[in-house]
Length: 437
Image (cartoon, rainbow, N blue to C red; front, top):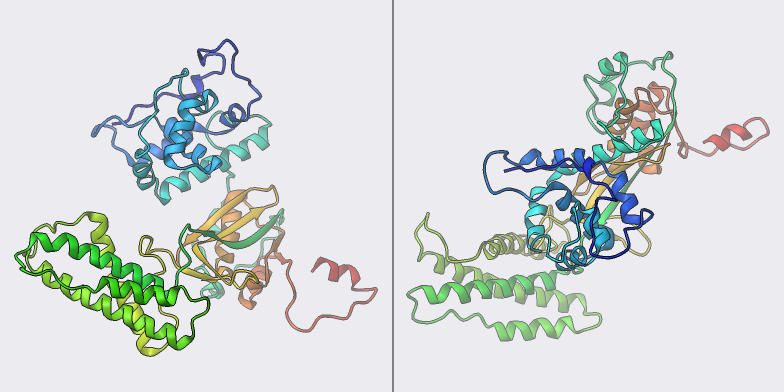
C-alpha cells in the first residue's frame, strides 16, 4: 500500500527541533535537499509497488534519503540508521517533520530496499536527476515541476525510428547522409570503467577451499535429519591442513599449486557425492531442510567444481562465465590492462559525458565487453536528448575502429582521436589541422 505526501510542503522553518537554535539554511544537507527532485524520485520508487495490497510502505523520501546518506558517507546499514537517529540535519534531509529520538526503521529494511531498487528504478532516478539539472541550467532556478527533456525534431524522430544495432555489425545498414540543415553542436566524451565489488581477491585454491567448507556445512545440517547410522567422513582436518600448507607459502610453484588444487577437487567431489545421497531422503517436490542462502551456495559450488575441474583437466587458466566469488557468483573478472592492476572484479560501465558536464551511464553489464561497440548507441542517445548530433566525439583508441570512424564520418561528426596509419609529417600548412586531431 502506498502512502505519499508531497515533499514540496516541507520547509526549513517548519522543521521543529527540541533545541533553542534553528537549523542552518547553509548546511550541506539542507542545500542538497533543495536540489533533489523528490517527487519524481518517489514516482519511480513507487512504480513497482501496489497501491491497494500489502502493508503501508515507508515514505519514499525517507527510503531514498537514507540510501543517499548511506552511500554518500560510506556507512553500513546499522550505522546509517544510527546517524539518521542522532542528526537533525539528516532527519530533515530524509523528510521527517520534526526531530525524533526514535529509529526511522530497522537496519534490515535496507536488504528489502536493495532488492526493490532494480535497474528500472535506478534508470528512472537517473533521468529525474538529469532532468532537474537541465531544467535548472535552462531557467537558473531549482526544478519545481516535471523534468525538462530535450524535444527531438521531426527529422530526428524519423531518423531514430530504426536505430542501428550496437557495435560494428549493422552500422553499414544505416547510410543516411548528414543533414546539413541541422548544425552539429557540443561534444561527447566516451569512456568505460569498472565499479569494483568488495570481494576477496580470488584464487582457484581459495575458492575450492571455501566451496569445500560450504559442502561440509551442508552435510552437517542434513545428516542429523536422515536415517544414516554413520556420519559421512569428510576429512576436513586433513583438507584444511593441505590447504594451509600451500596457502602459507609466499610463492608456491606451479606443480605444488596444481597438486593442491587436485586435492581440494577430490575432497569437494567426495562431499558433493555425499550430499546427493543425503538428499535422496527427501522425495522430489518436498522442501529440503536447508536455509535458502545455503541452497544457493550449493548450486554455486556445483558450477564452481565443474569449471575448476575442466580447467584442471585441460591445464588452462580460463573458462567462460568464470565464478570468482561464491557469495556473488554474478561478478566476473574484467581485464583492464592497467599497470598496477591488470584485472578488476565488478560491473563494467559504459559512460558518456556531454559538454555541459552531465555524465550518463549508458550501459551496465557484469560480463566483459568491447566498449567501442557502444559508440553508435551513445551518439544516437545524444541526438534524442538534444535534437542534434555532437560536433565532436572524444574517446580512447578503443573507440577509433574503422567501423566507428566510418559511422561518424557519414553523419558529419569529427572523431577527436589518433588517426589511423602512419603519422603525417608536421608542416606550417597542416600544423593547425594536426592540433585538432
